[in-house]
Length: 235
Image (cartoon, rainbow, N blue to C red; front, side, top):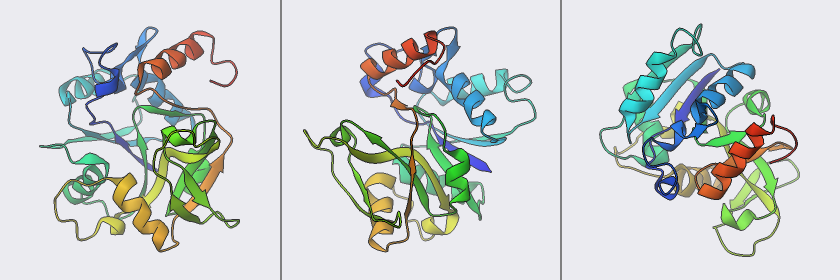
């Protein structure tokens, strides 16, 4: 299993509390968030990582190099630095083009913690998306799917949407989806996923799992408290 990790964002919403490092390296106790992520991904069977970088890429590369004989021992690790911000879809297309990726792969966000799902999403085959149910789907934008788990539509972010399913930030994709890329930035969430859903070829993989995006201070601190508690209970 090859895991492409989107880690190039600017982390603007988190800068008020974590200004000196990119959000993937936000401190959680004595270690960066990314350290916990890599441990967690390895425990689910990932040994091949590709990190897609831009903002403060030097710091993440330094972290990866410093851990190549410890945390990342026995893993295959690559990274790629975008020359300009490419957004989520452009980052993947850029990586596929420059690293000559021709097969299928998993993709996830460096700043999104998901309790499990690697095996389930991989076994679902391409094209598949992990989804989780949250109390406030409007904050993230909802995902609608039918009784066969075929995704039928995506809902825009909105206030007071209530409980619903959302994109959990882990997908199983394939290189051919990005064939013909025009080398311009684009969004997976706003462009690629709705187009796949319109063709009824994107599957939902519903998970009952811990989920948190540390991109805002409240959720970052909530994750820190959860780790400090020994990862007890649901965040």
